[in-house]
Amino acid sequence: MKVEINSSALADAVAWTTRVIPARPATPILAGIRLEAIDGTLQLSAFDYEVSARHHIEAGVDEAGSVLVQGKLLADITKSLPAEKAYLATDDSKMTISSGKSTFTLQLMPDAEYPDLPIVPAKLGQVDGPTFAQAVAQASVAVSREENRPVLTGVKITFEGDKVVMTSTDRFRLSRAMFTWTPQNPDVNTVTLVRGSLLKDVARSLDTAQNVVIDFDEDNPTMLGFENAGRVSTSQLIDGEFPAVDRLFADDYPIQVVINRQQLIDAIKRVSLVAERNAPIRMVFAGQELTLSAGAVDEAQALETLDVDMDGDDITVAFNPSYLVEGLAAITEPFVRMKMTTAVKAVEFNGQQEADSDESMDYRYLLVPMRFNS
Image (cartoon, one colour):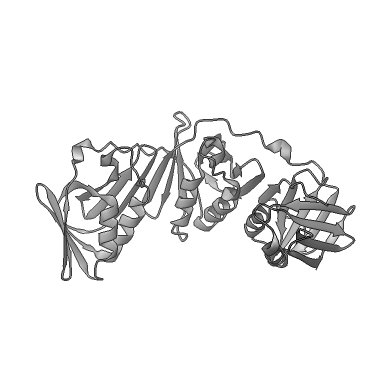
């Protein structure tokens, strides 16, 4: 293989592709990245049996060929190359990378032992990049870190006609984002459960100027694919039953409060400075005021009052301040509507554009209150 290529484009492509290589691969061969030079392109791929990544960039191919090299080492090398043309050349046992006055030599890995990449499923539909990225950021807020409960580390994605709903829960809170997309089949109706970490990773590396194509085979529902700007990621779906969470949303909320979102976030951050780890922050709603407080009587305390627009009876609730801020930060509108039933039942948070407008249902965040000492 002999290739001439832009060093910056090479570094970006290698970094994106090798991100799926685990820190401790199940077998040494999975630490590799495959490079294939063919028809004026350099194709890159990596795979760990659960997640795959494929990318291709333009290259001057003097001699076609395919090799496997250490992925993380190649990523470190390519990001350090001078901003000049890079040249890749291989012989029987090694690959030489040269750029400017720098030259590196890597030992080749046994390409024949590398597993075949999964076949990318058929196209299910597509959505614009910014919409997809925002929905993933919102829906993944409540993804659990409990690896012993795999279903809670995933995001449930429901495709129904031109609507897509993404949901996650860690048992203490629930995040749900909804958006409109363009399906291949207008009658599509299917549900998938994909790793939240992969979904966030895909969204982080998007070219938001281009659409995201989602791939899925309803006849072989084991894998979800994502295509964007020439990059293709696939992920094995999580096998398990996602909790039945729809019943957690109340049909009616007798207590509703509208607050300036950023003012609320800032106040929570200030008041929670005195809260011990995992200690709740208290929210007392009375009249048209919200009083936030934290801290114990014999220790540091904080108190702050905000003006609110409230309908319903006075109520006091308490929350984990981190969970509260993370949910509020995912709302994109300038105002937030808190909807409550009782002090111990889940509270729903929605964004709204104006102080007196209706709330948006595109993003719904549920948070279970904590018990507190009055």
